Image (cartoon, rainbow, N blue to C red; front, side):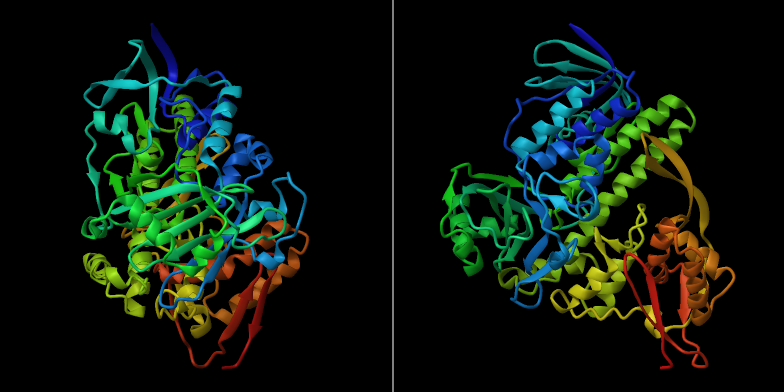
Length: 566
């Protein structure tokens, strides 16, 4: 049989389901087929999410279904990592501010700031079934055995049954298998010496480290000197517990994986205490998780989405986030290509740049995360080599400069790197390194725009099933998207460079727009935007001793500045 469709998606995981669902939501006339080689539910590793996923789930119309599954609410993570052995917390929302509310809840208020910790056997089935309900033709236990090509064009797929598939667009969402990536002979770059082995099992009746509100908790990330342990509650009784270590250490250890795994679980008293009542499900598995980036994310009529296009170390829990975001962006790109409002070349270029930048950013930050962990007693030579390859000796100044090279302003107008905000990077200095990143807003009082040598171009903005154009500046590999608080900074600095007067302008605007909540939200992000623009070189900051400095602090609801004379 010959199957003909508009879009053929290989792989029914988060990337494939997201792409299929959003294609049918925004372009219901499209004939979309998803081919999944397994039968769901099936086990899969990678259970810890980040908040951007919740927003995409809500757009897909299945956030309520995921919430109804009663997965633990991820408030953040607890780490034993860095210079000191004490446990420390990173939270999306402060645990003391998290209000206890009955579940299932709505996607509003505090729940827009949190994430889920999901049992993938349940979660992936919810998503794939949801895509089918939206109108995707889903074929499970259907293996693609061959990709037929003509140059850079996919001519069709051959299924294990002997049936063939012909489509106008093809999406490779096959994870590390990368069926289309391999068939099109796309080379992969390995921009780091970080090559790890992961091993894990699932446990019943392990204790949660902390219970926050109703169903809220933090995952545990615990250094054991030669690697690290993840401890991720997936439900009221089920927990995923894994061990990650460099492949080189695994080879030198000379022990079977399950022996190393069991030994690691006894190496940290915190983990021992959490698992004192736990019983293994005996589903022990291992895999390699080598970070890589495909040289191309898109071709003549094909796209890579999710792990097929690249993988970053799981220490940042970013894998599923990147998969969902790629699924959304590939759906928007295909819909926009069919509309013909923008050139296909520009749409593909933007998709390539966005995916490559996102993956590479997380690989880079994972490198920093490892090299900043002085608790790796047995891996000091290994982490030193990572630092050497990156030209990083982890002095405070050079560590901060190295992070800044990747850009503190990303395409989505978040001010940070590797998915972490500037505030988090600075506050974690006491645990990771001796970074003392004093804000330039506290030591400087003159701020001048520096756009010299920057090219003004259009960048893609993915929203509501389409791709819009918004302006950005490009220079030396860094991007300055023009929008949100960045636009406000640009407007203000074009008429005023002195910080006291800048404060006065912002205060006047806040008073003038007291009932304009969207504007006040943008204004509250003004200090973070200005600070990030200084770090990324878009603003030159200096100190004029004839003028006062300004102390500032911002909150989600209002902008508060306190002038001082020092």
